[in-house]
Length: 351
Image (tube, rainbow, N blue to C red; front, top):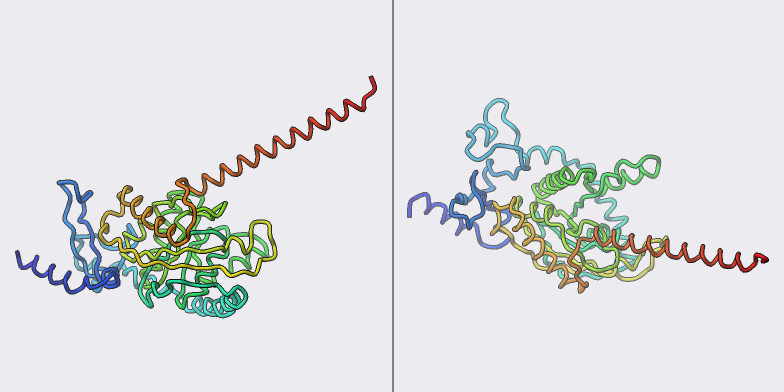
């Protein structure tokens, strides 16, 4: 074994003590030009210590690349690009933290007092450091109940319409979502929206915070668990190295079903599973088969926690099917009503 190999082995032995050490200390990055590890021409994996200034997590396409000069990596020299950590910390307003704290005390306290949500597995959420909370999605209130029961801030992605709606109501809605630290993502372009979501998530995790995501991509239309969308969750997990913590929301859809204005006072539940470690796949963030494998494993854990029936189609497709079925039923009812009306009119008409 060469001296270089000995040094790397010592580093791995020193730092790979637990899942927490792995996701906070080491980042495995495949060298440029490498492919899937089973391919005979694959490149080698290199161990990169995140504590070095060179190893601050970067958004794809930003920062120095492997093999760049020292000045580009550590910020030395005139005109060097600042590290992502420096940019993110500088942009992270203390005012937002104060508003989030106030919202958590007022809104979170009210939710816990009124609905008394029960929680299992809260010890699985780390006291510090980045982690991804991957949850099923039953109700709009999921994004409020989960942060309410945790001591740490959770940042979710919200559709851009919440931040751009016109009028007084739109401004109040935008102020609320900004205050609780939610991130707007434009969903008008599928690929652009996906990249924006990944970049936003990486910034949250680089700050050492909790990032919340709904792998189904939208609320369940009927309370069942649907197939997870592979791109966002898997890429964020593989690019960041952060653990994925499966979460199951229980009965939140019963509190305020669609069309109901007044919520029903009942106890929702939250089950939090053990962290899932996907560092064995780091460096393969562009492999769609790995994306599917990671996502399916997370969805399986959510299914076990929630007890929901699993449906192997996307929730968006299920919503389309439900809408089409309802439309067909409505058209059939209208046609039958019209036929009945014509028949009744015919009976009244004298011959």
